[in-house]
Image (tube, rainbow, N blue to C red):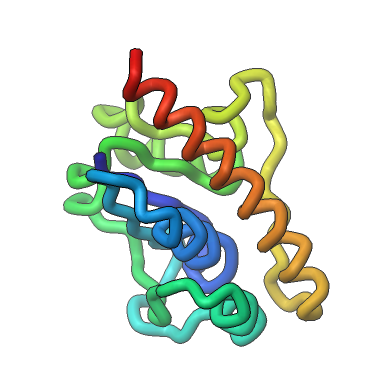
Length: 149
């Protein structure tokens, strides 16, 4: 199963989510991240890197812009916001069956976005990192349950 995590610039939320989910070492699951307005090759945010390294997780240190090939590779694309999802549905309507907000996939009644810590303090990033850790735990559980049915 190929999972893509998507945010705006691929320097804060999606790299943290990618590192957290990848660290779970789920069997037959590949994880990547990108941004819908990212510039290829920028370093991820210092505070994001600090938290990922504190947790001793492998991570991708460079941002990526989402491409058509990425969308085709993915079985699931999880966005951090409704706005990201709307952009993807507009750009790739033929792939709508695999595009979800992260929170909406985990709990279909949830319409909340994952908080963007961009420009915030380490503590602000830590709050988002903790939120993403809980969301990745829930995502792992949901994917495992779906695999059993």
